[in-house]
Amino acid sequence: MANRIRELRKQIGLNQNALAERIGTTSQQVSHLETGRRRLTQAWMERLAAGLDCEPAALFGPADELPPTRPLPPGNPTMRTASIERRTKETQIRVAVNIDGAGEFMVKTGIGFLDHMLEQLSRHSLINLDIEAKGDLHIDYHHTTEDTGIVIGKAVKKALGDLSGITRYGSALIPMDETLSRVSLDISGRPYLIWRVDFSRPKLGEMDTELFKEWFQAFSQAAEITLHVDNLYGQNNHHIVESCYKGLARALRQAVQIDSRKTDAVPSTKGVLSGSL
Ligand SMILES: [Mn+2]
Image (cartoon, rainbow, N blue to C red; front, side, top):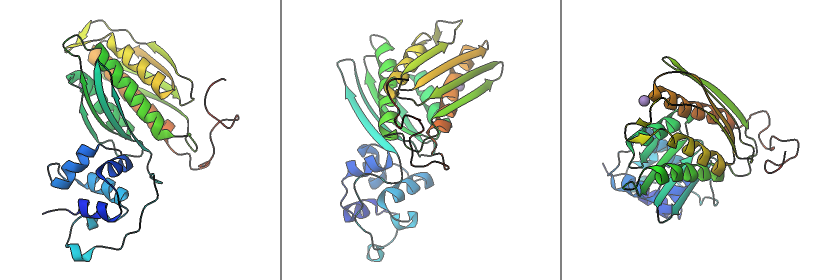
């Protein structure tokens, strides 16, 4: 059955890019959803309905029963979304995030293990994450790993805007079998990484284990987050790094949450989050 996404989108005067921005995905995904190349799951229907300002059921049905719609104001008043594209000689990366998502992801970096980690990040933070990266993998995985950290960090920062209403702090203790890791963070505007994680093997899959610190460093700098990552104990290198990504996800989920007791204020006695202490 054909859907009416395109029709509804045109009715409120949005192009594919604008709708993509609004729901935290790429225009290519919107195109796939419109043509049916991408399956319209319940979660996608809810995102699209929010972006199109209609009920999910309105995405289907005969054209003559279109519900009345009103033009939307620019930007999205309900969801914190952003997309960023970054091109260098080493990498080309597109990222879209929706902070108020459901942990849906479309991750393609060309590095299998990194995809696995970024999928965990999305799934456990509930931040929707679409990422497409093309990097100079024929050299090594360094640039692609670091640059995905930069672009995801930038997208998260952009989507969070002026930080008003956020909980700001988050922390998580994540066990995986024999491993336990702790992640604490402050969405402070002050980038800082403490990384106390050691690996006993140089590689996981095709990936150098030393690159994980590079990713966390890049992310914390670009997102302007103070981030402390400690592996308290553990033996299995896959568990060690995965527990760090899951910890980041869980801590972020807490910290980006709108604090219902103080929804409109920036959580700082300075009235602004950035720069000096
Ligand atoms: Mn795993």
